[in-house]
Structure formats: C-alpha cells, structure tokens
Length: 316
Image (cartoon, rainbow, N blue to C red; front, side, top):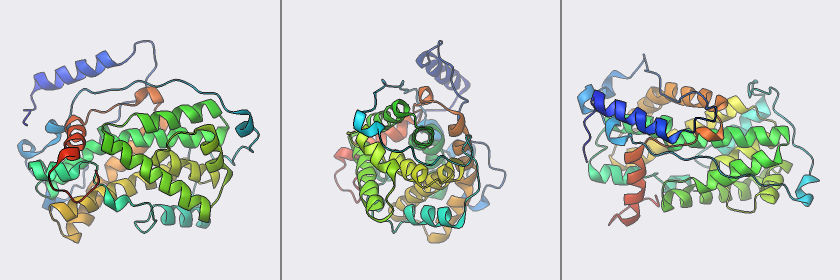
C-alpha cells in the first residue's frame, strides 16, 4: 500500500480532520512532533524513502458519556494530589524508585509479548531498518496510540488528584473502549489488569481501589499506571514522560527482535525519539478527551492485519 505525500494529500487530510471536529467544542493544541535537531546520522534516510505518509489517515473519535460514582466508592478518601495542579513537580527518591520499578521491563505485566502491530509492518515490508522503524514509531507516538494513551494517562491522574469521580469514570471508560482493533484492546486491558493486580499486592494505594470501584469494566494500561502514580503522589508531568518513554522502549524492543537490529541501534532510536516523547507529553497535559483520535491509519491497519497473520511471535 503506497500513498504519495503531495500538497493535495496534505490539504485533504487537514480537511478530513476538520470535518471530524465539533465546532462547538474547544479543542486542545494539536499534537505534532517537533523536528529533532540532533537526529542520529546513522539512521537518517532521504525524505522520499520515509514511511509517515503511509501511516497517516483521517480516523477520529469523540468523547463518551459520563458516569456517576457509586455511594460506596464516594466514601473512599480522596488520594493525595500531585504537588502542582498543572502536573509539574520534582521527583523525590521514593517516587523515582516507584517509577523505575513499575515501568521496568522486569515488572510482571507481560508487555514483552505485544508489538502493537509492528510485527505485521515488518512482515509487509513497511519497516525494514532502523530509519523506517523510527519514522513508524514517531507517527504512532504523536498521531496514534501513544498520543491517545498520553491523554488518558493525564486525565486519569488529574481526576484522581482532584477527586472528580465523573471525570475518572469517563477517562477509564474511553481508554478501554477507544482502541483500533481487537488485539489492541486485548493488549491494553491485559496489561492494565496485570499492573493493577501486581501493584495492589506490592504497592497498595486507595487510588487503585477507587478506580476499580468506580469503573467495574476492564482497566486500560495508561489508566492503571496513572492511578498508581496519583495514589502515591507522583507528579503528573514526569510520570507521563516516563510512561511514554517506557512505551517507546517496548516498541523498539519488538522492532529489534523482528527486523532484527542490534542493541546500539536500539539505543540510538531511543535518543532520536526522545524529543517526540517530550512533545507528546507536554501537549497531552493541555489536551482534553475531545482531542482523542488517531491519524496513524497504516499503524491501525497493521494492528488489524496482525490478527490473521499466518505466523507470528507477538500477541498483537
């Protein structure tokens, strides 16, 4: 599947996005990756060979409905808020330890078993080397799964910190519902359930109990991690950036095994994608649930195609 990137294509894509937006709602700032001035030379390719034009599309979603808190859940104590209402603040030693532990590849949530459709992209020839993997992941991060997960993380953390039960339920519900494929839904809810179980056993907090009581449905991974961070008074901004960095690292790990790539190339990719991680995290702090949507159309198709792939190593 090829899609040449022309001025007409870009104009049509903007028009399609504009049609999906409600004129009566105020929207947050657009999330777009900033050009990386320190791009690694060894994985740089000519613009004509890059893949983002294959990934972009015009798919968008709106926000869901609100839900009221149960009487039993409302009696729970409101978790300790983050030090700054805007999500800033510095990490102390205890908070840093928690983040490093929860987002470590060794934390038993099974993230290593999922590729978020990258396996099919490699099979189809869309990803062939470090440069094409970088471009693919940059779009997933800034215009697809990573962007949406960042917004869900931000909204869940703030709802718990402020004691806004209706906002918490809405964020948790949309995080579980707005997934691009059956496998993507399996991935985020399986990781979310495992994270809640392990964290409640070793690092219990009222915020996770509150989330489970208010929202009886499946808990998406970003909502689970955000709830634990809010419950342990870990500031939103550094927690969100750490979450997105771990997400990108897991994607890179899958790509390294599938292409394959060496460990040095993997580290170069982490460096090259760091500015996009920071940009996505910063924009998500100012976004609303009305900004949820995906323009990573090729990546969403890859996740769907993976469901029927003949041979595969990953669950998604």
